[in-house]
Image 1 (cartoon, rainbow, N blue to C red):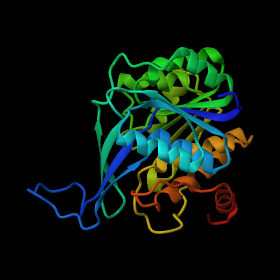
Image 2 (image 1 turned 60 degrees about the horizontal axis):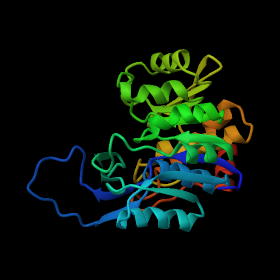
Image 3 (image 1 turned 180 degrees about the horizontal axis):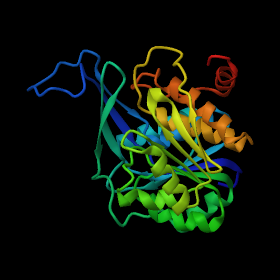
Length: 302
């Protein structure tokens, strides 16, 4: 861990089992025949952010608790394949896992197994401080036990980002993340008034920038007290799965931020990367590369 890293990603390592279903919501039936197959692959929110950052040329180090199990082996293999440094701390309860039901239009329903952890799980403070001291930025997922790591990371002075995903603006679990990070991402899907929630995050916490993604409607960007809309970008191929689009957006936004770009440009990068992610089949872990991101972001109609 002596090498300088651009970003450390904390938490969010795991595996997903992908099931392509004929429609969502899925009507009750005793059984369904899945002709496309049922596949398990490494890749949850932290993995996808780390992969996206690495594909964009940033030196990335991922840290999480992993089990000594086949699922943990898949996560380790994903990181080796893409050259992502990984600090895998032992998790006796096993590696995090989920089941994703994916509809024909790319929408998904995710079922998370919350049994792969304990309330008293912690990241060693010495490990957190060592990683933070060697990084320009830290992205903290909302998976347990990342909340307990926030005060330590804040003490180190490393800039922080987080993704609240589909927070409704009320669940208290998300609040330490929302009010500690310098850059906050979230989905607008569960928000009746995205601007109100975004401004509350900025007013009650430390966030300089808040981004609420809104799928095909683009995104909302709150920066320097000003709210603006980020136009959606047309995907470069048919949409097959929306899983990982928010992670791709966050990775590309952070790439822009660490490259010195203004928030509006960072958000444009995020929109391009998120659109690309929707064209990647759920059974595969992939992300847009830097050259393609810059070329698409520079295109007049994107």
